[in-house]
Structures are given as structure tokens and as C-alpha cells.
Image (cartoon, rainbow, N blue to C red; front, side):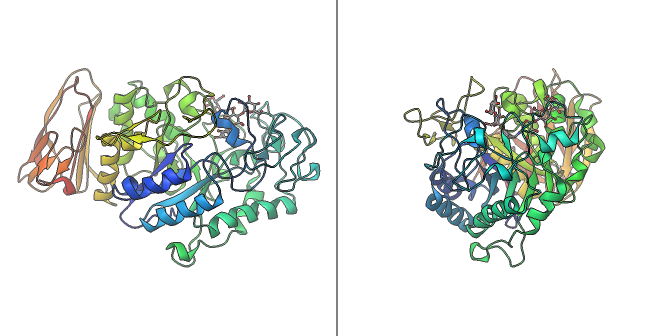
Length: 476
Ligand code: AAO
């Protein structure tokens, strides 16, 4: 459960937040597969409570485990996993089994009804016997309360109950049969690690018909927000799977917002309080903290601060630490606002511009050249270690990944203009941030590396992007 099950030579998971299954299938074939992406985290797949204003968060209020949501039905889901796996892109599902819908969630996207006030969800079925007693979480210093009471009024399932364990395992195994590669376990912090261990222990191996090697286990990443100072620590979960490393999001945001000098990033990793690399799912922002939910606060970078966001994303993708996940958003002004729709209810498909970017209300950070070209960088450098670290003593830094890739950042208010050791073989390279290699030419800046591995690197502080990146697959 620690292995992402990525196809070899690929990296980079993208969270296609609120996308429809048919659109994701097409995206795997047309964009993610060809550009080296390894996986997609999809929005919750099971039936959720329908809320009048159709906020994005209605999907975090389960009504049943039927696979019917605004993203599509079971047939569409199954077709998506098949089409994505066929082009080497894995699917990870956001699964919610800490709780069921809160009061007011009386009918679901799949036609089931429920009575949350009496803890009755006939679509599963669950009855009041399957839930913890009603109480609210107000004190994160009390582990019993965090795990046995209700998160924002969501009816709290008792995962210690064997019937509940069975229903959850059935739901997850159904998804494994349909070809998924793993799960993001929502609100894992609100469940007892021992109960999660029992549930994970009931999971089947991944479906070999979908190209997984026999004996493969689902990758599990548990949503555990641990910024320190609370009763529950991520280390209680890292023996069971990976965790969402929120400190990464917080620290990278502070650094690229200029609240921490970039030179301090030289020991980026566990020295910053992060979990071990293979247990850390890392991200610049997520669907919660980009809109003020969850944790991370004001320092989180989002698509709304594009220059710093691209720099932070490039750093995350260039650095070997963790399993990076790229956020792909819809644009919003109101933090409750749901995805773009055609009629207030049905989710609209994204449309694409000639430069690969999206329109129609979809931001598609994963289609920003500076981001997808860094996924290609990550694939090009493989497991090569960081070498040739350089900094100017403040906010200009550079490093190589062995002799396969080199990246430089300038977050100072003056130009970077230095001769630096790139570690790369002599030649002319295309900077994959300002442009793309196109046959034997480059649409952006070029960098000439001498026979001693050095190159003169220029990054003006008023340039569109504060990063420059070259790698062996972008040699001209
Ligand atoms: C909606 C309405 C509610 C209503 C409810 C029921 O908004 O007003 O009461 O329905 O009718 C999402 C939305 C919720 C939404 C819910 C259900 O975010 O607004 O409620 O769907 O529709 C905690 C959890 C964490 C959770 C996060 C949002 O620990 O698991 O809150 N994230 C997941 C999902 C999320 C989803 C759910 C869970 C529920 O990703 O999308 O909710 O399925 C501290 C704690 C954290 C805690 C935060 C927020 O964080 O450590 O564990 O997260 O507080 O309460 C600093 C600290 C940091 C602290 C933070 C905030 O950053 O360092 O530790 O401040 O104080």
C-alpha cells in the first residue's frame, strides 16, 4: 500500500477536481498519457447528497456506495479506468467512509433517499446501529472526540463495527475490480488507525486485467492533517499507507511567497518535519486549502498567484522528495461554488485552447506549459540525486538532478545572472519553462552548456516565470 503502482518512466498525479469520467478518459488519451503523467485523483465516485446550490462539497456527504454522481455512472467510471490504464495513466479514488451525509441530505445523486436525522441510509443500508453516538468535534486536542464524534455534523460511522467494515471493504473492492490503482482516504484522521488496518487488510490485490502485476496492492494515501500541536499525529498512520503532507503545502507556500528564503530549501524533506518520502503525498495546494477549508491558511499558493504558483510547482516536481500531486482547479470566487455547469446542475466539459490551456471555467493548471513540462523533467531525471546545489545567499537557487536535469529559481527582486555548474553534458538545451522543444528547435530560451558542465544562466526578475529548467530530453 506504499507503492503508487505507476507505470514505469512516469510520474506526477493530477487531481482533476470535479471532472466528469468521460472527460477524464479523453484527457488520459489526449493529454496525460502523451505528456508522461502517471495518475489521476478523481473526485468522489459514490452517490452523494444533492444540495440545492450544488456546492462542490456536496460530494463529501455520502448517501450510498452506488457509483452515481455528477461525474457519471458506473459504466462511465469503468470505461474511464479501462481507457486510462490502457495509456499508462492510473486512477486513484477519493473515498469517504468516515461518515455519511449530515442533516438535510435527504436524497442522493443516484436516486436513493436517506434520513440523516435518524441515521438511516437505506441505499447501503446503514441504520443508527452503525454509527457512533451524536457529539460534535470541537477540540482537536482530544483524540477520542476527533475519532468518535461528528466532523461538521457529518454522521459518524463506527468503523469498529464489523458490518460497517464489511460494507466499506465491499465498496473499495468493487473499485479495485473496476481497475483503480489506489485510494485517497478522506478524513482518515477521524478514524482509528486499528480500524483502518482491518479494512485495508480486506482489500483484494489490484486487477491484473487492467495491467497491474499480480500481487499489487492498492496505493493508500490517508488525509491526515498534522501541522503539529494536536493530539493526533501522522506517525500513527504512516505504517498503514502514505499521508497527505500538509506541511509541504504550508512550507512551499511560505518559501515562494518570500516569507522564507529559498536558500533554506537546500535540506528540503524530512528535516522540514515531513513524513518519509515514500509516505508523503506532496502538493502546493489541494481542493480544500485553495479555498480556505482544511489547513494551510493564508500562505497556500494557488492558481490566483500564477508566477509564484508555477515556481513552487516547478520546485516540487524538480525535487525528488515525495509523491507530487498537481491540483487542477475550476476557477472560483465564492468558496462554496461548484464546478462549471451547463444548466446549474450538469457539470460542463472543459474546452481547450490552441496553447493546450483550458477555458469554460476550468483552470487546468496541469495544462500550463510550465507545469506539464516539469512532469517531463521529473520523468527525464528519474531517480538521480540532487547535485550541484547553488544559492546566492538569499532567494536565487539552482541544482541539478545528477547529470540529467538542471533547474534555477529567482525569487529576488533583481536578476539572476551567473555562470553555474549544470552537471549536464555539453550542448545546447531548450528551457522547458519559457518554451518547448519542437523537433530541433526551441520556442523559448536556450542554454549552452560547455564541456566543463557550466552555463551562463540568466533569469530576469521581471520575466513571466521565475524559473528555468533544462534536461537531457530537451537537448537540441
Ligand atoms: C459542509 C458545510 C458545513 C456543514 C456540513 C454538514 O460547509 O458548514 O456543517 O457541510 O452539513 C468538505 C467541506 C466542508 C463540508 C463537507 C461536507 O470542506 O465545508 O461541510 O465537505 O459537505 C478538517 C478535517 C479534514 C477535512 C477538513 C475540511 O480534519 O478531514 O476539515 N477535509 C476533508 C475533505 C473536505 C471535506 C471533508 C473532509 C468531509 O478534504 O473537502 O469537507 O468529508 C484543523 C485540523 C484539521 C481540520 C481543520 C478544519 O486544522 O487540524 O484536521 O480539518 O482544522 O476544521 C491551521 C492549523 C490546522 C488547522 C487549521 C484550521 O492551519 O495548523 O491544523 O488551522 O483551524
